[in-house]
Image (tube, rainbow, N blue to C red; front, side, top):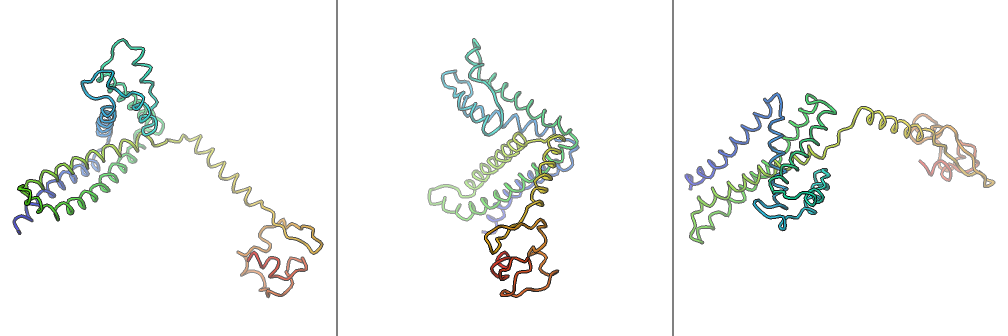
Length: 267
């Protein structure tokens, strides 16, 4: 049993070495452009192949579905249906090339707005966060697999071989999920220009000014409404700075009402 447990641990250790090696390469890399480009190309290819199978004919393609997914999930607007209708002959490989090229152009436009040096730390953070998050989930899945793998023996299967096979499949899925998650975040992130940041700051400042100019009102005995120009005159936040008023005492605002029926209700 001890020998079997060590063999199971060897599988997770081998995968751990791969993950740690990738993390170290990400941390030590001066630029991540090549890694991100490869992940993006692979992700876009997988997306296209879902709707345009390899070595298939045009009648088998689902271009409207591909267009919708690219627009909704990847923020890529491509008139693939129109291009295919206008083209005399087009292959599935050309569809993949068009989508990959469009994704590269959209990503490069984001990088140009802030500069590669400023965008690289963001790419590094997204990569590391995605790897760490999904790696923890993967380790939990391996533990769950190990707990029930001995049952495969009842089906005349070697539990150890089955564990290695399924652990490898889970690891492959882990890499695919990380690839897709990182690419999706980097493709859909919105880069604000300096002008947009300035406009947002001005809007927040204007809203804060409107809030600070709020006028408080209270009813008088004759039914008329009096206003307090100074919103901090009897603000509950200044309760420690004004004399304590009893609930049945006249309200200090001069309305003639008891404190509990006037500003005391706000407090």
